[in-house]
Length: 252
Image 1 (cartoon, rainbow, N blue to C red):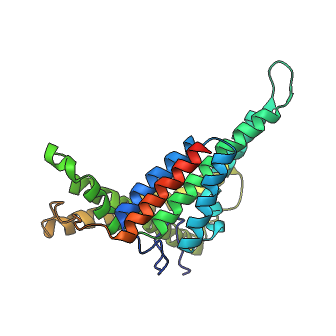
Image 2 (image 1 turned 30 degrees about the horizontal axis):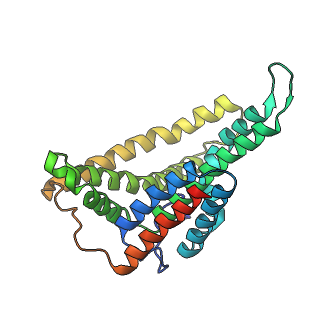
């Protein structure tokens, strides 16, 4: 069976982004996302878009993968564009200002999705859990279960590609048994996909039970997901560069 990769799933590599400390990547993603939504258009947004192109090139991520990640939301984005550009109340017509406003909002969403894709495709889920635990370490003094929360995030991220692979496996199995998932009207297709969703839910619950049993057998307490150590000079330089880039975008 052909192996499928969910958009944003980790892909091994030796790019410059792969080598950045995960704590720096998490903070950089938060700063870049805030800049993407707060930067004024069009100059500030252009600076943010240029940063996205640099991140895509440095991580070896194709812009086509960003479009693939946006595919499930294309209908919603298209409807949003038309809803803001077509005026039906008062004097019906086409509003150029509405189209520009909607296109600007869509551009911000595309940039944030691209940044998140760069982060997730260059960072392993266990490393993300360790990075979150390290950044949230001060909250542990207040009784917050930092290790458990970070592990929950790691497990959720790991289950995304697993769910995609499981859907493909069950779909192929049902088609081999004669199921026609892409034929007929909308109601028939939805009922046909019930033959995929029910086994999928059962399989995911079974995997979750097996994972819980394995963690319990290994006496997992959440304290194992701690990350210590100072950042290298290169990581500090990257973080300062991201902050400077976000500041330029906000002041453009």
